[in-house]
Amino acid sequence: MRVLFLHDNFPAQYRHVATALGREGSHQVVFATHRKAGAIPGVRRIAFTPAREPGPAVHHYLRGLEGAVLNGQAVFRLCRALQAEGFEPDVICAHSGWGPALYVKDAFPKARLLGYFEWFYRAAGSDADFLDPSGMSDDDRCRIRTRNGPILLDLAACDRAISPTAFQRSQFPEGFRERIEVMHDGIDTAFFAPSPTPALRLPGIDLPADTPILTYATRGMEPYRGFPQFMRAAALLQRRRPDLHVVVVGEDRVAYGRKLPEGESWKQRMLDELPELDRERLHFTGLLPYAQYREVLRASWAHVYLTVPFVLSWGAMEAMSAGCAIVGSDTAPVREVMQDGHSALLVDFFSVEAIAEAADRLIADRALAGRLGAAARQTIVDAYALSDLLPRQLALLRETAEQS
Image (cartoon, rainbow, N blue to C red; front, top):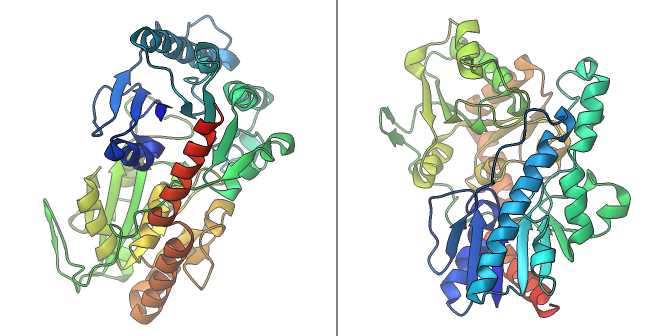
């Protein structure tokens, strides 16, 4: 089987399936990406670079669309180079939204296109107006609708389509939704498993197993993932519990939502707002290797995961798999995988006091924390385990390729 993966990042959602194909050794696998680093045995990574950035004179509604066209153009040229080498894929697996797949059916008309659809943008009743419903302007509404241009083009061109969760699939218009299958990437439950010795030892951090630890893990520290509310709740808990340590994993940046003015960050904003925080008991680790990140989850006494109605983080499900006792936001993507009182404590996204109270309850009641953590892990083992989902993904890929 000849497979072409397309994603701005590497290996992103295709980590496990690309690794499995590379390991089998009987396939030709090419991964086209913006990333110029990283490797998977048996997989050829090729970087594509747009000819230029979107032009400053382009209407601001169209900057994302022009960026997608430039990405698609770069990938089309790469496809022509692959053709010159004799590579013709049976199936193309493409992450939609940023343009890489726009013209691949023109380059490889016989190949089948399997699209990965993470999100459809909406101005109302979704992520865009959740934090500030009154702040949505008419200009914002028009701009957000236009962001779906590359996604709709991919939906029209693809032969099969998947989305990782039912909530994410539900964001797409009904006529398109019927074409999209729900298939999660899968969580490595053997790796993200509880540990019998949950002491936390990282560079600069040495906390024995009897130390209460409040944890938070995120791609970026920002309002979309409830970072301001978490920090305010952490400050409340530090005052109540003089032995509590707070560990924050992630980058000091905005991955989603509105960017801050140059030189500002939400981390610094919250530290300035909360001078009462005990910095000796507050640890920012930055991004961690997977093994160290897992140790943070294993050592957690209470783990906080907050999100607006948006893409569900892998980190939320990895924390569940590791047996964390979780305080989650009572929002649609979280409710799909966590049940209040059974596998987590779900609270109002905006209520700092409710977040602090729930975390305090888990820290105080270790039997409750154990029950919730065990139920959270069982949820992932039953429905999202990589060992079950990877064979399904490979079967879907093969079935799609056979139709080429």
